[in-house]
Amino acid sequence: MESDEDCERRHAIIIDNGSCFIKAGLSTEETPKSHFRTCIGYPKNSEIYYKDYYIGNKLKGQMNALSLHYPIKEGSIQNWDEMEKIWNYIFYEELCVDDPSEYNIVLTQPIMNKKEEKEKMAQIMFESFNIPAIYIGYSVDLSFYSMGKFTGLSVDLGGESTQISAIFDGYPIPFQFERLYYGGNKITDYLFELFNYNSKMFYNDKNKYCVEDIKEKACYVSLDYEEELKYLEFYEYTLPDNTNLIIKEERIKATEAIFQPLLIGKDKEMGLHYICNKIIEKCGDKKNDIYNCICLSGGNSLFKGLSERLTKEIKAIVSDYYKENVRVNNPYGDARFSAFIGATILSEMKTFNEIFTTKEMYEEYGSSIIYKKDPYIFK
Image (cartoon, rainbow, N blue to C red; front, side, top):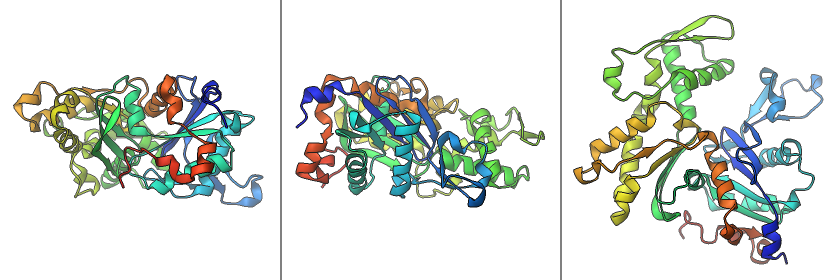
C-alpha cells in the first residue's frame, strides 16, 4: 500500500470542471496551463474531416463546421463518455503527461450535485487512468481559499450556476449554502434578447460569441439602476462584418438580472443580495465575521461595479447593528481561475494528503468512500 510519504512526493494535477470552460494544470503552477471551452465538436460532414471529434484549441477556426456538444449542464456531468474524452485530452495533449498514474488528481464540482456523480468521477479516474489518489473539492470553497480567507461568505458566480456558502475557520457551516441555477450564460442570453428586441442583432450561434464579447467589454453593474439609465453613455462595438453596433441601456439592463432574476425568467428566485443575507442571517454568533468578508469569484463576478452594488443592497436590508460591517471583496487575481488557484494553495498544505482518497481505499471500501465526511452531503 502506498505510504503517506509516497503520496506527499507526488505533484497533483488540478482540473477545474466548469460548465462553460475547463481549467487544468499542475499544483506547482500559479495559473492553469490549459483553459478551453468544455465542449466537443463533431464534424457535420465526416467525409472532409480526418478526426471523429475535436477538443480545446483544435476547435478554433472551424466552429461553424462542427456540431458542438457540452457534456456539463448547470454544473452536472450529463455525458460521461465525452467527459472522459476531455480528461484524456487534458492529460496527454494539453499537459503532455506521459502517465497519469504518476500524479495525484484534484477535481472540482459544484455543491449539491448528486453523490453518485462524485463516485463516477472517482471511478473513471481510478479505473480508466489508474491514478494513485484523488481529491474532489467544491469550487465555491476552493475559490474562497484563493483569497487567503478562512471565515466569510463565498459567492462563486459561474457560467451556468451561482454558488454561495458560509465558511468558518476553513470549513463550510452545515446547511448554510445555496446554489442558483443561473449564471453568466443567462445574462448573455438576456443581452441577446435585448438586442433582438431592438432589432440590432439576429439570433444565431455565430453571433452568440460576439454577444459574449460585448458583455465582457461593455456591460457593467450600475450602483443606482433607475438613475443611471438617465445619463448612460453609449458604447460602440464593431461586429465581424465591420458594421458598428451602438449599445446603451443594454449595458446595465443585462447585469441587472443579478439583482432582479425575474428579468431572465427566474420569477421564483430572489436577487443575489437577498440570498446572501438569508444565508448569513442563519449563522448565529458568526454573522458579524461573515458579513465582514463576502468574497466574489467566478467569471460572472468580473463586472465592474458588482461589489459596490452588492454592498449597497445588503446594507439596505440588514439591521443597523451590522450595516457598517458589510464588506464585499473583489476576486484575487483572475476570477475565472479562483477555484484552480485555491486548489494549488490547498495542495501545498501539509495536511492536504490526509484528505486524499487513495486507490487502495477505493478498492477496499468501494466508491462510497469518496464522499465520506463530505460537508455538503447529509444523510
